[in-house]
Length: 266
Length: 105
Image 1 (tube, rainbow over the protein chains, first blue to last red):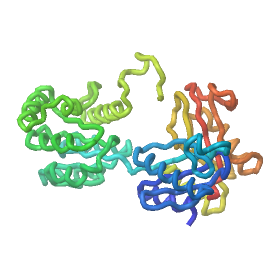
Image 2 (cartoon, chains in turn green, yellow; image 1 turned 60 degrees about the horizontal axis):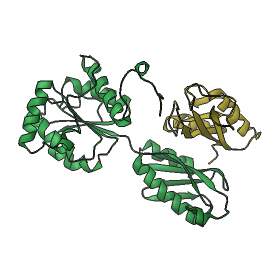
Image 3 (tube, rainbow over the protein chains, first blue to last red; image 1 turned 120 degrees about the vertical axis):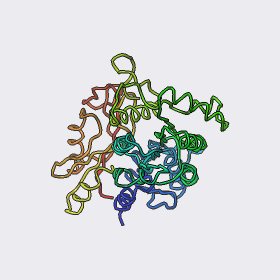
Image 4 (cartoon, rainbow over the protein chains, first blue to last red; image 1 turned 90 degrees about the vertical axis):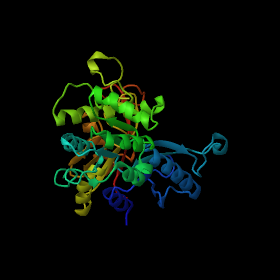
């Protein structure tokens, strides 16, 4: 199988994979295909392959792609390198899609799941009420679960990271308090909780009752969820939530560009 | 590159030669992320994009140059802030580096 066919198969299966290409220096064009369980191809030297594969796995884990330079025998420090020509490689990684866990099978959920799919998320909808959490109501979701939050976090919590999002739309303290507890115990990048300001305040009291009252915990909660766009429909609300998720990830202000200075892309 | 797979497969199966351009590095403001890719077939068909439309025309020329054997695979820089910068710039003022090669691997 060619490197391309191998890569294409893994990309279609949404498996984590990194492609290393020599883009400058000796061995221009050579390829190494790296996955968490395999290394195929060669950049022209065993030690160079080993070092590049190691770095590729780190880039894959971080969801980053970029250029690196090594010596032709895998040297990584100027002392080891001496006068050797540099090998410049491009490490391109494809991580599995980010995940969005939506708790609460309400009207807003379908709109949020749709917008999240546009942004490339793998979407799971979860609600304890069997009549609401149905495939029929959420055909756009990748998975619909009838469950309390606890088991969902036991199963998926360890896999959540900075690119992932948990959106809690239930409005029901019975359900959203355990969902917040579960989300806070993970490394998930975004936790949004829906509700009016009044709901938010009552929820803070309920959270304090279960021992969630530290600033570093409450600071992670985007509650009330979403940016101030003034929208009312489920679709408009979904845009406001997803826009907030993007702005939280990039650390940007979410202000209109014309009202601020500075680079648009960074 | 994921979004190019169907077209790439089609070209490869029909024996059409293809050049692939990928963004490997960005300085300053860049409209697309690292990894943004476009492919150009020997017949001049194009899929994908590597910028907001500012440099695609120049990339097609370079890609066809590689397929015709007029230039080797390698890195091409587009932008204003670099002495080696290619004549075509980015409207956003940044610099992008592309690696262009024949997809023969």
